[in-house]
Length: 298
Image 1 (cartoon, rainbow, N blue to C red):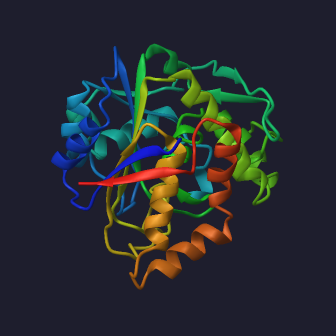
Image 2 (image 1 turned 60 degrees about the vertical axis):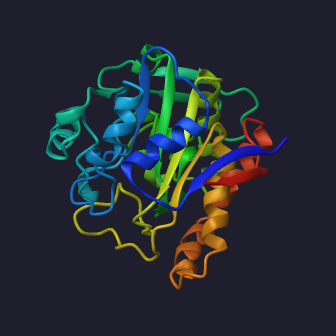
Image 3 (image 1 turned 60 degrees about the horizontal axis):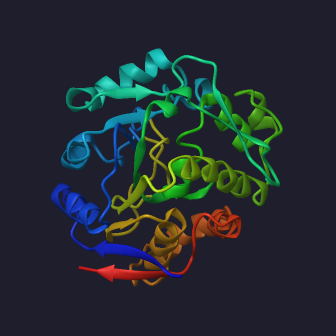
C-alpha cells in the first residue's frame, strides 16, 4: 500500500504545523523532537525560531546526541559540555527544554535481528524517557551519506557517540577515533544507517511522525561548520510530512530529480556519488517503510 506524503511549496513555521496536522496523529505523552541543532559556524541549519510553533504544538523536548567527530574537524558537538554551550549559542534552550540523550552513560543497546552490517544499535539512554517522537529533518546533502533526511535523523541522529562510530564503521568499531580508519564502504555505510534507523522507528511504532523541510539545499550537512559548508545550490522546494520515513525521503529525492533547477545536477551528484539512495532501498527491504507513496499537495 502506498504511503501518504503531504507536500506544500510554502515554507513558513505556520505551514510546518499545518502539514503536521494533516497527518491526523496525536503524539502521546512526553514527545521527543529530533532536530539537527547545527554545528558551530554552519550557515544553513534551520534555526529554533523556525521550529518553535511546531515544537510548541506537541509540547516537545528537543533531543540530540553527541557526535563522533570533533578535534581536527573543528566540530564542538562531540562532548556534552561544549555541545550544550553551542546549544545555548544557537538559542535552542531559550525556547525549549533540551536533552542530550547520551550526556551520561551507559548507552542503551538495541539488538538488530537479521542485520547484515550491525548486530546492535547504541542509542542515547534517555530515549526511553519519551513516549513518542517527532522527527524534524532539514533535507539537504551530506559529505558521507549523500543526503540527510528522516532516515539519517533516526540512525546517526539518535545514536550515541559510540553508536555513531559503530554505524560509520558498519559494526567494526565503536571507538570515535578508530571508526574513521575503519569507515565502511559506500554500500555498507548506508546499509548500517538503515538498520540502525529501524530500531528507533520500531521502538516508537505508531507514535512517530516525520517532517522534512527542503530549504537551504546545500550539498553539505548541517554538521559541516566553520565556513566549510557550501552555500545552497538549489532554490527551496517545500515541506513534506508522512508517517513513513522511507516514503518521505524517497519523495524528497524525487522532487529534486524532477526539478528543472540548474543546481539539481550538483545536488544529485553528491547523493549518487555517495550511494545515498541505497539507504532508502535498504530501509524498504527491511520492511519498516515503502518507496511507494501518494504525494498529496495542498
